[in-house]
Every structure is written in structure tokens, then in C-alpha cells.
Image (cartoon, rainbow, N blue to C red; front, side, top):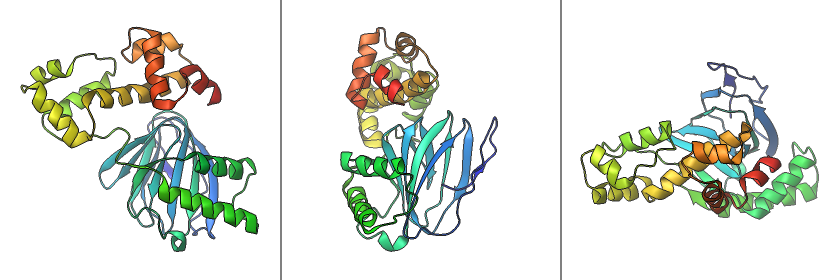
Length: 264
């Protein structure tokens, strides 16, 4: 991450180093709502692990959104920017370029492994900014090995400029509670349900129902962090009952909305 610039509402400034890590640097940050990091790059690689809130990253014209427990991988030299609508907490680990062998060569999202999370949590719990002992370096090497094997995702919530699909996705982002079926959306953009379904698989890499579920999950996280009740959140994201919403939330996150909020 670079230096945040003042947004429309509020922003924090952080004194970030412009020197490469020697060889790994651990940083934890909490940024206020509506903070924007202007486009920038650096000579080291970086993994950004989202712990609370949702972070939006722009890389080479591609938009990525990461909810908690997902991460961005940014190889050295790539230009990127970010924005968070709500207060967001994340861990950033800067990695010297000479340690990049075997790590992803292009920007991507990562689904973090339990081993990665355990080591990272230990380092941050000890307020470790740089490895200080031989044992620390061995743990960091395992951390790098885990980054190499973490499942890589095209995007958590991919977008599309497709002339049929783009207006549908845009409308749903503005109103995630919209429950129109794919067939009904197809009529609105003057095409067939089958055609729109094929565009979803081709452009998004997933079915329309999965994309909408992911969108609702992202909005639900934000609403939960605002303190809304489970029932209020369920209705706000388009579910007619709390139980249906809770089932969706557990399916994606592995935990209930209430437990998620308590842990955050």
C-alpha cells in the first residue's frame, strides 16, 4: 500500500517506509472510512490480508474486492490503488524481491491457508515488525511457502463490461436486495435467459446465483459492522428470513453472522 490521500469524507495518513524490507516487514493498519490510496508501485512484493471490512483494489484496470480472511498478492513493480468505503483493518507483509522465487508472478487474490493464518497471527501478536532470530526466519520461510500454494482467485466479485451483463451487475450493486430472476433480467436487457447464463459463465467464471450471493455477502459484512440486527441485515440484502441469510453466510464464511461480528 502507498500513502493514503484525502477522500471525500475522511482519511488517515500513515508514515510508510519507501525503503525495501530487509527482507520481510510486517505492518498492521486500520484505515478510516472513505480512504483512498492513489496509484503507486514499489520495488518489493506485498501481501495484504483483510481482517475487517472490505477492501477494493484496482490493478491494471481490474477491480478486486476482498472481504475478511482473503488477501491481495501484489508482485514487485505493479501499479495498484485501493479504496475502502467503511473502516477497514488489514495486515500488510512486505517481501524483498529476492525472496520472490516460486511466488505468484501476477497480481491475484488468495484464499489464505490455516497454516499461513496461524503464522501471521503469531507474528502480529508478538508485534514482530521484522524477523529477529533464526527461528523467526524459518517461520517466515514457511509463510512464503504457504503463499506459493494458497488457492489463487480471479476475483472474489468479478465485474464485466459485456453489453448485456454490465447493466444487470450495476443494478444489483446498487440494490443487492433485488430478487429478480435471471429470466426476468434477461427480458430487461432484451435477450434470453440461456444467453445471459452463458455470458455469466464466460465473463464472471461463475453462475449468476453465485455472483449475487457473493455480492450479498459483501454487503452483509458492512451492515453487520454497522451494528444492524441479523434480521435487518437479512432483509436489507434480499432474504425473506433470517435463517436463509444465516445459511448463506455460513456457507461462504464458515461461521455465523453473530460469531463473525463478535470475532471482528
